Length: 73
Image 1 (cartoon, helix red, strand yellow):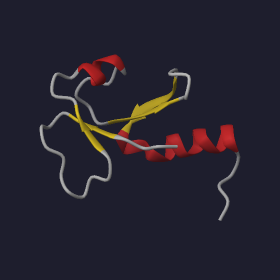
Image 2 (cartoon, helix red, strand yellow):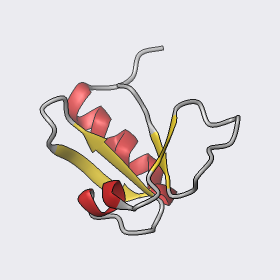
Image 3 (tube, helix red, strand yellow):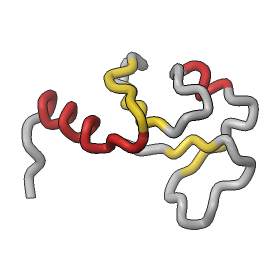
Image 4 (cartoon, one colour):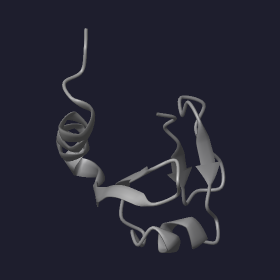
C-alpha cells in the first residue's frame, strides 16, 4: 500500500510524509467524503475498497485483515 494524505489546506506540514493538496475539493467530492476527515482505501484498479471516518482507523485495519489476513511481525 502507498498511503497518501489529501488535504484541503494549501500547504502540508513538514511532518506529513506524502501529502497532496485538494484546494478545489474535487478529490474529496469524488470519494464522497465532503470536508470530513476520512480514510479511503482505493484498489489498484481504481475501485474504492473501503471508506470510513478518519476517527475509526481500526475499521480499515479490520477490513485489511479480513482481505489480506493477519499482519506479520
